[in-house]
Amino acid sequence: METRVSSDKKEVIISIDRPTVLIGERINPTGKKKLTEALKAGNLDIVRSEAIAQVEAGADIIDVNVNTPGVDDVALLSQAVKVVMDAVEAPVCIDSPNADALEAALKVYKGKPLINSVSGEDHSLKRILPLVKEYGAAVIGLVQDDEGIPRDADRRVEIARKIVESAEKAGVPREDVVIDVLAFAIGAEAESGKDVLEAIRRIKEELGVNMTMGASNISFGMPDRALLNNAWVSMVITAGATALIVDAAKVRPTVLSADLVLGRDRFARRYIESYRRSQQAQG
Ligand code: THG
Image 1 (cartoon, rainbow, N blue to C red):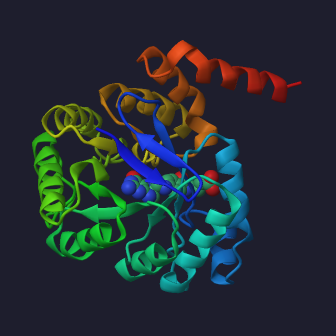
Image 2: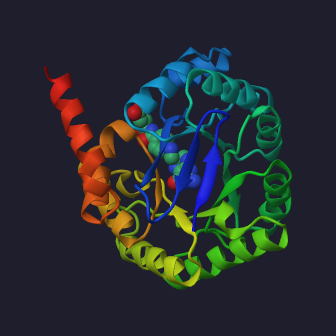
């Protein structure tokens, strides 16, 4: 199962037979005061510099989200996407809860983007899947439906199946759907980690699709978030996640280690290359 996304200069393939794909999460105003203020002022300098910094840190795809109160998402998201296309070769993950903003950005994008996201809710499937089809994109499918985010593995698998089947009915092949199993904060839902890992294993076996995950949701409210995020990243990769939404600078060494151990880094090429680069950086 290969999910292909691209810019006009570069293709990225998400597959269990290849290294884990990193989707850089940093162009997102959530919790970032400076970026929020800049976006409200229509200033996209940070968007440009964050795109470049994330690619340097090893991000393969750049998530672009400018959604915050006081910002006209429909106008600004496409501008931000253009800035990122201009700054880096990496493909873009177009991220908005607003379908009109997604559509405006799809119109200006050159290549095959990832759309973040559709959910299992009927209104979302109905609105987003035709866009995915029309623009020939790939899409992240969030396992939540009209009843919210499910608590157990069974419901997660069920909703993932509903999204994949709805996509196929809408003319979107299943390789263009990347399922996001959605983890809760471990501080709020102590049992959810196990359920999410089980859901990943079952979706891999029963549906065979690629899977992604926001790797830092798990650690909200806990001390030493980086420690938990890194442990979690190696577990979800082992279970079958193939693309992760992350701060690449903070988790890449763990991802490279997991890929190496799982036979997804032939001749340890990427692991050793990254080690050499970090040695050079230290002088
Ligand atoms: N699944 C999908 N999309 C997603 C998520 C997901 N998009 C949003 C989010 N989760 C992933 N992106 C982020 C962006 C920012 C942060 C975490 C995840 C974040 N911000 C810090 C904060 O809130 O405190 C500020 C960090 C900083 O300045 O360095 O942590 O799960 N499909």
